[in-house]
Length: 113
Ligand code: 5GP
Ligand code: ZN
Image 1: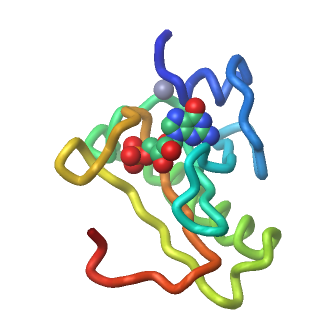
Image 2 (image 1 turned 180 degrees about the vertical axis):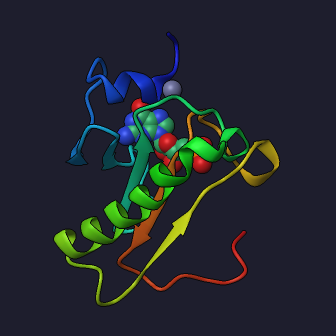
């Protein structure tokens, strides 16, 4: 198993974890792009958004509820936050284990770069 996020999920590689349950783990991005930059990942290995199937519907709903909980716990729910998934190279994906970026703590531009 060479996937770096699978290794974070099994704690073979350390990360600053902010939330964990049986299905997902969330941790600080190693190269933050905002005052808060959290990555939320399913523990199950899925390379990209395109690998989702019907059986993952509940998992994805769960991830969004976890994101809301993290936003409240870390204190940026009220001001707002952005959730981003980069799907494949052209969108900027570099780690091929599905992850949801949660960015907060500064004003965000639109459109994104
Ligand atoms: P992507 O470009 O695939 O959407 O996002 C990958 C993210 O993972 C990047 O923001 C990058 O900084 C982060 N990242 C890559 N390797 C590690 C790591 O070993 N630990 C942590 N915490 N974040 C990582
Ligand atoms: Zn993986």
